[in-house]
Length: 266
Image (cartoon, rainbow, N blue to C red; front, side):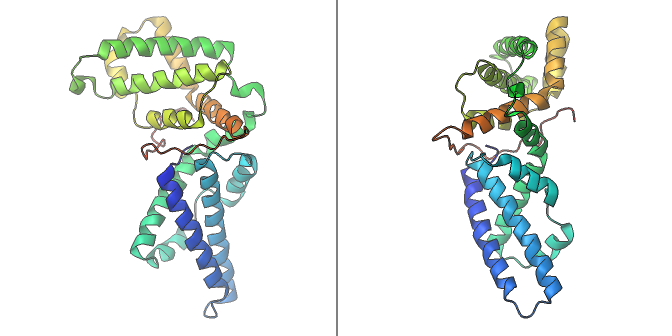
């Protein structure tokens, strides 16, 4: 979840390279003890973050609570003062990998609140939508299906992002309803659904369709959007539940996309 097979390749290279850098610095007689301690300490944090990302990418969430606690205690991002000199020392290929790693670090920082909430509710009933949630989700799914039908054959330039938003939101609703019914849903499908949400926004949809919705449809859509962060956490909690099942490791080979553009209440 969150990261894909290409990210895994980068992460494996990152882990090897940074491990070598730690070993090299440990025996570098040209470094003072204080500089060595600071340099190695920061690289070890990088390695630990990369291992958390690798766990997420392979859906190995068996130790997710401890991994999130590490991120909370040690920081979600590297020290800027360290990175300035560090990046300048890298060769071209390593620099490209580090750029990807920086993107993944930013994405992990954005996803952290969802993951933290998911870990908190995974062992409670909170990962399953309530009856009230289900009523809202069903209403929104029906609305999105109606909008998709309306959009068929229409000029894409006029529709803008509205059709993609309706499809992405409808897919999210379908997954949430499967979760509420305790039905099978893969972590890869969940990740793809969250990825799709990150590629769209509400502007075009609201500009074209919001005024034609009935009052109940509009109220349900507003309620759904207000709880979007909680619903994403439920989806990630289901990924945690999936990871506890034998043979559950799933690696996404889908498009490399960012969910950090998802607009949701804090």
